[in-house]
Amino acid sequence: MRDVDVLVIGAGQAGLSAAHHLQRRGVRDFVVLDANPGPGGAWQHRWPSLTLGAAHRVHDLPGLPLGEPDPTEPASAVVSRYYRDYERRFDLPVHRPVRVHEVTSPDGPAGPLLVHTDAGDWRTRTLVNATGTWDRPHWPYYPGRERFRGRQLHTHDFRSAEEFRGRHVVVVGGGTSAVQFLLQLAEVTTTTWVTRRPPEFTRRPFDAEWGRDVERRVDARVRAGLTPLSVVAATGLPLTPEYQRGIDAGVLVAREMFTEITPDGVRFADGDEVRADVILWATGFRAALGHLAPLRLREPGGGMRVDGTTVVRDPRVQLVGFGPSASTLGATRAGRVAARAAATFLATEDDAAEAC
Image (tube, rainbow, N blue to C red; front, side, top):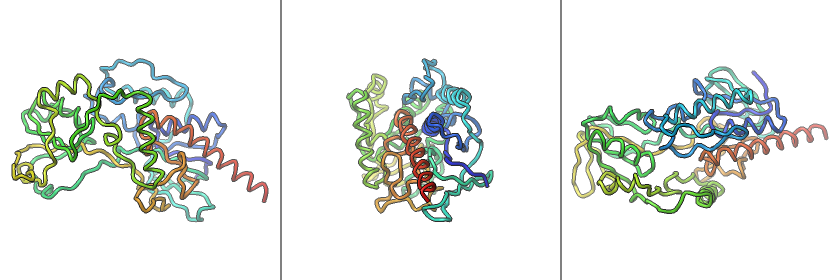
């Protein structure tokens, strides 16, 4: 059993930001546990054809600007290199690969938290959870899915459009990933795009005011104890010139969601059946928080209510990269807020101990 004042789970954007700000606040007794084999967070797993220029913007980590990398370089390579340099520059205590199985509280809310991992257990006074969503792909169920004779895969497992050359692909989902897949696939094969709701393309500029508006809407749900909105539900899709060309070419034109999966394709409510070799589920991810289940942090609405980054049901726990801080910009900000809250929690506990 190893003891620390603060334990950070996850070394993505949010976790590294939190670690940096803990260090700046003079908190020395902390560690970062990361399940990945190397630096880069979830970015290191993104498909090679996703270039930095086509990805969502990667915002600077505190104290080390990203600079202006080649936008045609794979995003996975750029971000992995950036995070590696960041960890080294600030000598952050990152332990990897270490996978957290669960977090428990055997002594109740006034005691320490126990973090159980595949590399031993840790005891910590406060926890910063920065596990993101990559490890929890969302696969919605539709009747007949288990009978489909073709291939099914999720965004999580996509590598290259080339492996689907000559096969008809049904792409499910209304987000940015689905749109990018469709445009890539259109160069090598035929596609059908299906969405639960009509895709919402918007000409609104994705500027700072837009970002604040999105964060406010997502934050309102989280504060109410509800599950966060999906990214596209909160933002819509930017109507870029590339996307407009895809619409004009008939590639980015969606059908309503199918009602059933058949052995050889998908069937719609009107009885029409589309044959398919592949179903690509670009249906998003959910927050990877299963390891926190023993702490019983969920509200009746299914979410985890936070004040800033502090979990209302247990102030020993900070959630970063969650809800309104799920973007790289929000994650960087949340790291600062979480570090401040964790440092304040430690100081309050120390003061109480001295008073006794």
